[in-house]
Length: 405
Image (cartoon, rainbow, N blue to C red):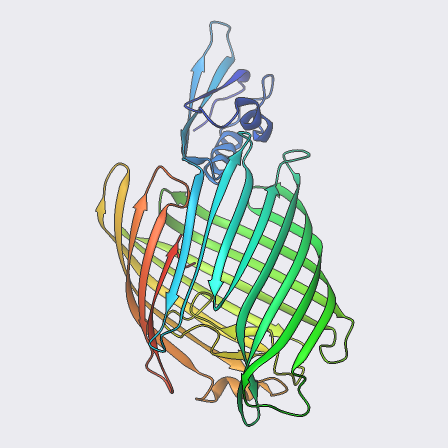
């Protein structure tokens, strides 16, 4: 669509009730007096669709009585953005854990996220977060996170498994930079304390039964988003890189680095089908420690596997699934899915040959269902059942809000 050498007389916003008009105009590249450019308008629409407060957006162009002057109208279909969430996960080992919380994704009508959660995973945990990606301008923002996580964690020793009470209390500050709607950078620091207290299981004279360590973490995140969004349907490629360097005050838990990248690919299949895949490649400093950073976990990577059943210093994980909308109405969609989650890990202090060890390989096919409200941001209630087909496999159900990936 081309508009020749027209000029924008005015930019009007309609359909928004909770999202402030001046905020939408601040994010828009089209301004009164600018050249009427269809490419620029389309970029604005794609950026608006990515906002948590917007479920869909469109534009209209009207000629004014003055020759060569046009009014541009952006139409907004808003999401409801005060969202409770819950993640519940079980396995055939009678493990049960959950996380519940509440998030507002459009605080003050400017797409500021406020959130809080409570988690039970043998012990109680909680967290608070504020994310204001457009606090300073349409390109610069800030995020603050506090969490106090306490869980029962397996520590894999040479002669067996020890169970520890693990606590991580942290405060994080991140600077946010978004040069355009496809690229986002985050850079910041995290101050945290880790506590390990032995509960039961195997012991090792070389592994302490009680440990408390203060740490400083430097974090860099880069996200590329080339997805075309149409309600719950996704099409395109997305990549997320997360690199961290941790400085420690203890030789028992020395400094280390960790990095991982999630490559996600989505393909529309017909009118109601969606194929989705995620490949995670992760690598960390190869310390021979029972406290390795990459975990095999129900709620992170392998549905049905259980809660933190193994650890490693490198990881390859592939999740792939086919989603089909059995029902797709104006505001509600019922999606069924079939999936396969698979992955392998490098043992602490091991080598890359560990990826081929059948003791490290996990493959879990499964089925699931999604209940989707198309007018509420991220209002996707999911239930997945995964059944392992590799060594020492388990099976289990994972409940959650939002797609698994």
